Amino acid sequence: MLEVESISEQRIAKTPYLFTLGKTLELATQQPHQDPAKAAFELCRNYPNAWIYPETSKREFVDRIVNETASERLNLITLV
Image (tube, rainbow, N blue to C red; front, side, top):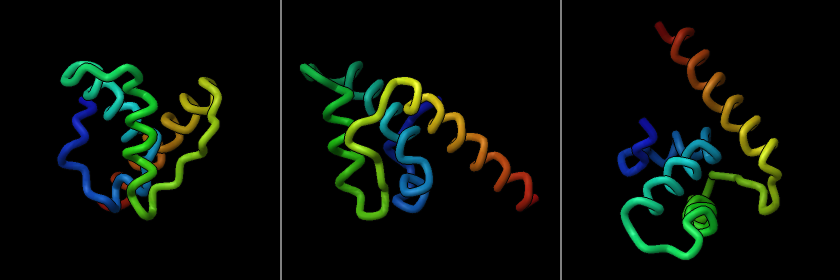
């Protein structure tokens, strides 16, 4: 569901919070990280056009993921 390895840089730029969530879950299950969320945020910040705020509350994080997902789905509907 949240597989992030094959996501293009263009899509990461449009959905940085969703990418970060997926990467966090991936890191938590694949590698022994002390803080997979912090590692995922750092990986996201390495992409040139993916802007993610350094301090985001849990509520903001969820709101941004919902908004990113909704925007992406609406774009797909308009393309069809």
